[in-house]
Image 1 (cartoon, rainbow, N blue to C red):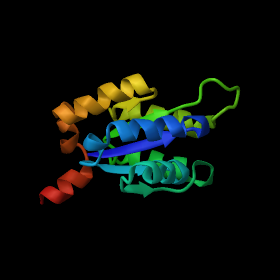
Image 2: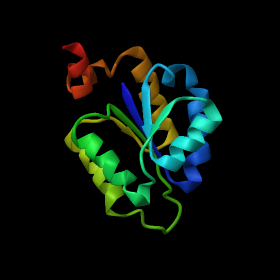
Image 3: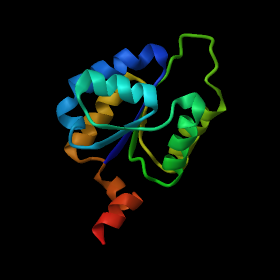
Image 4: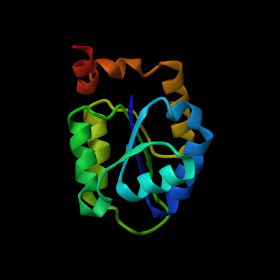
Length: 139
């Protein structure tokens, strides 16, 4: 499964700690993230993470594109909701696209734990049939 990771600045440490805690599950999947989050998590965990551009430099659009093409099976998106900083249209677009394409999303650590445990149990295996990467490998 392809798992996308996005974490706003103050949530990167939480994302890294989460990935350390669930390393044994995450290591069995393909991970991608925006540049800074990907580096932060990779440095903390040793997990191999495909890195997109930084969010403000096109990374959010790259992520949105991958979601639009059903290339992402699950999104862990730890957002900073405590500040007045606006994260813009791109962030809302990513969440909207996940709704449109039925991609499971966790926006906090509690739902991320539920989602990753469900992934480990095989509850999300249905995503294999809608992800074009899976279908390409099947041929």
